[in-house]
Length: 184
View 1: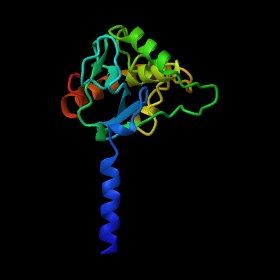
View 2 (view 1 turned 135 degrees about the vertical axis):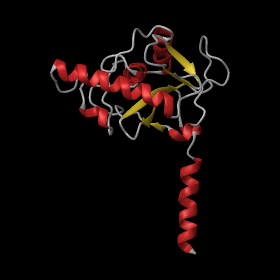
View 3 (view 1 turned 60 degrees about the vertical axis):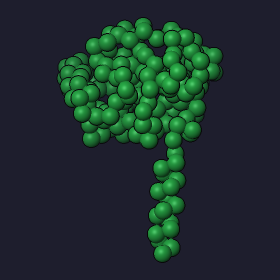
């Protein structure tokens, strides 16, 4: 009986972790396609921002071929985790709310063409929170394909192959994986 109660308590704790644990500017991530890569977004919650509609609670890069970063609604926050992995890193500063707001306004609808190794959703999220665009894809297969600025070097041919593979994975995941309501 004690085991059943313990399991119940643990499940209750896991299930109750929700959007209340996210703060303005937190980076959120979710694994896609059996841990091949992660999708990233920035939590904006109910903060009033230009062009943000009621109910929209994240800011992220939408789709592969689009050049826009948008506000969107995260319908199932339980699939996402807080992923502020650079907090506390040497020479990294967490932006103020004002800086985060300014960077969101700068990038909104103005993200330039998507590139998996230089302009992806993780680059956007780290730029918004820290002021530097980094993509490490920690803990997933994509991490080993091609390192980005600030990471170890790999040859151009490997990076090109990695870009093609990541584009294919993201296209497949957009069809089969849980995406925010407007993501494509």
